Image (cartoon, rainbow over all chains, first blue to last red):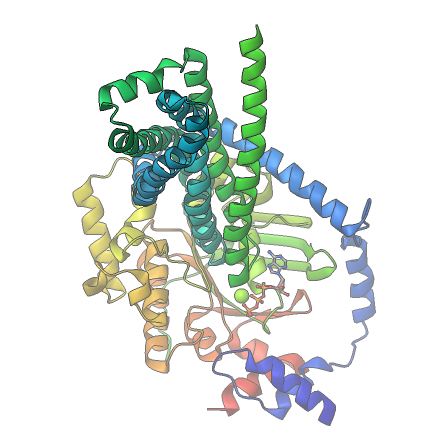
Length: 308
Length: 259
Ligand SMILES: Nc1ncnc2c1ncn2[C@@H]1O[C@H](COP(=O)(O)OP(=O)(O)OP(=O)(O)O)[C@@H](O)[C@H]1O
Ligand SMILES: [Mg+2]
């Protein structure tokens, strides 16, 4: 009895506004009635059997996760083209994604442009080839740095933001609340966000490349007395149509990845406030990882194209 | 606080009926053979200790969770067999007020209240939606808070807005998840009044989950006691608490002797 006393005290403390009274403790010790055994027998007939792991707990969990991603992916494309379309929310999200990362992208793009120019100059000077500097910068920025820098910044800023936002909506039952008021939360939250990043991140990539080239041109202009006009002429000289399409293609893929990962992690967040932090964190890590993988793959694929 | 009731309950019209319902989470068996009927125009309070699956039960009714076994009918439709569209149609007629209020914290109170209307009734004009929102905010006594964000409100105010947000679609069935939990007696009696007003005005049927016997007694026609995954006793307040069952006696004594 005394043992029970202490145990039950803790349980009832979790209930707001309640105080412990000994009579309540008996709640746990109801003597079984005659028909209780019958009921238990009836119940065991319907109870789901305990789960057995096919491989091991961790492997199973991983496979389930992969399956979930697949489902999320197919659901995204299925629901994307079915009404209702939340156009206003899509535009909202485009603003959100764009404006949120604009200052950081401006700063980083500009600095990357300057620093990369400064660092490349000595090597080129060694061969007496510093007149190639604008072309080199053009290739480096448009083909690689612009898309990659933008994608990494957005993975950090946008993907984690979406992960945290949807994660907290999930754990505070806001997503369930949408569901019960007959709004499809997947359409309203996920589809709008993923399309927003897919549309806006390519724009940001252009913007970032532009700012980086600007930084580079200022540096070149002050150091090598090359005019701005001839800098840009040279910068774009070596950029072919296929290079350009590669950048656009890459940016679209990055945009999709960043939105998709953020939404997936947030939408499937674990219960509790820890789930929110975890969702945001995992979104960044996974988005960055995928961006690198995709970078390698697109470069490889477009190099095959060029070989033809 | 004496309850005022004037309407006649139509005992022949079940709006919700649940047969032999089972629900487990992995090895945690939460619901084990729940049988239950809610009639038209009736309020039923569901009592039970924390963690007995009360919230799970009403989440199954609106199709947020899928039952493992058994049948759940709401307004004549088997909930777990509906397509997305049919389910949405049904959900428009069932109001669900969350234990945690679940207000959208990215929107202000006005937008929170307008959300179900804006999203579902495309026919309404901006002005009509505005009027509806003001009326419902007035009904819960929070008309002055429309421009504020959910984080600016107290727990009780959030709860009332949460209830208002579900009422704005004029549901036929209301499911309240602990509407008075953690509130002071005055706010709590305001909510009790609100629940009764809603029932009288719109003749809704309600399930009210609560730990609070004052709330149960003053809002409900019947009491249902959930214990170990089943309803061990269903009846009027007097029926249930005159019963011999030790579970009920203890619940009753515990709640009333502490005041
Ligand atoms: N989505 C879920 N996944 C896993 N377990 C769950 C889930 N939802 C509920 N449970 C478990 O089911 C049990 C019943 O939960 P429920 O929220 O229905 O309790 P409750 O009766 O509403 O309690 P309270 O009065 O504290 O709200 C709990 O043990 C809970 O941990
Ligand atoms: Mg609950």
